[in-house]
Image (cartoon, rainbow, N blue to C red; front, side, top):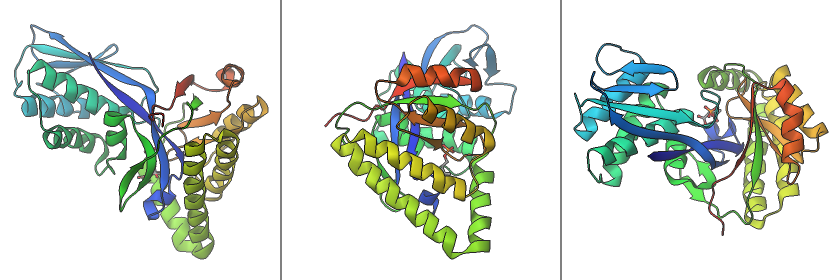
Length: 301
Ligand code: PMV
């Protein structure tokens, strides 16, 4: 069985588009892929849904075909079964995790040990089928399990986690589009100029400070920075009443900090609540579509 990690943006989303750093890390949950034989030809199954390599042109069928071609398995009578342990299409890196797990499983099934570049090229092809022009961050985290400060110019600077960091993750169940949210911020920046520039810079400062807090194991400071980041994201109009509600519920239940994660407009919130994760999760369950407690996979220092 092949595994890959989900991811979370702890601090810095949107500002990262304008060159600021984002603090992002892999989660210790993600997805698994296993390959078995299937007499009717190649297919991909996700829970109850099955996608054939032959007759369909949707993203998952195309991703399957790309995987089979790159691993020399085209036409093989097999089924790739993928299981997710986190909400999909909610900003938690599920598509990158799918790409990495599927590529790992297929190379292993074909008895091939690809060069890193060959492996990443396949993951990139799959990610492009789903996302057009991804930054590559999700795929890198899905593959490596790292945590760090990411900038567009320099990629990921890994950070060693001083102590384990658990997060409560609540999915609002509201669908969102990263592209639409990013475009909305661009329009606001165009219209308002300097106040938005400064908001984006402040978000960058918060992400840098968060990186230091994680390195030192200073979770109260990380929590306070998450709250500030939520305020700044709200100023960029990417938060919603549903997300604000989830953030408020988490804080009232004892979270040290809570914020939306990813593009906003829907998707998930994350809450930091050391030793109170169960209480915060219990408060969120009645008001969220899905709630899970996950640990950052970033390696201990
Ligand atoms: O929700 P996600 O995982 O698609 O994250 C989007 C993060 C943004 O900063 C809003 C966009 C980006 O490309 O970095």
